[in-house]
Length: 291
Image: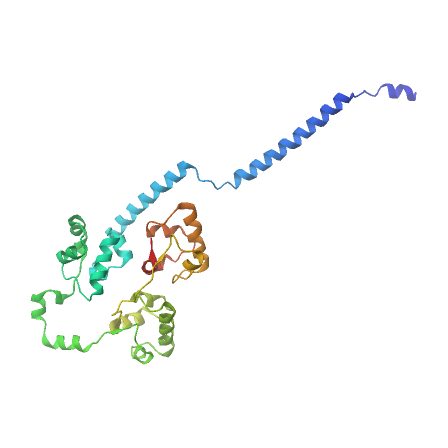
């Protein structure tokens, strides 16, 4: 009986066993290759040439849209106080902006659209589209100045504007709403920045209300421009970028990563792509940047 049962067991040859073994190995190898490829594909970060071209075109479209939006929202302004950021937003070149700032550093003021073009060298087309928003003080017109009452002249002369960068604690406290706490905060921030470069920097001092800031602007201004050593974001190290006012180490790291992936920065709008970048301070930060 036992021998009959053994005779019924199918016989497996050596070649058949080897075939089964190789088949099992091939199945395992294909499974490993499949999972490795799947993991690589999911974590792939390579930007295809088409994506790069699309991104470049999108930046151009965004820039055009930004300029169009800003022109629609443009309000009257004094061209003597055009910052780097505002000049760029209006379509001025860096050379034209630098000419205006050099003229202002000599304590000169532009008093007409024609004089603005002479100083900066902007095109007639640009001047015709933007100069309609220029707003100059009344005293720039000789006829208006002649009609100004003498009593008002005396009042204007009596209001002496002081330099915010040299104001003492007591002088700051003479402004309504500015006590010892706020005056200390203003001086501490001024020391940290090594001097204010724009009065808008008062907006970022914690606790100051719009009314406080308006009162400070009525009595103080930046009379002597602060010399700013601008940082080139395209060549600066991570540590150097993190020392730029209003930029911390985490934001600086994002700038370096973006720069290594997309190349050198060419305009300010690119900073909108940096995670957690303080866009409300971009206009002021631009005063510390170079490309």
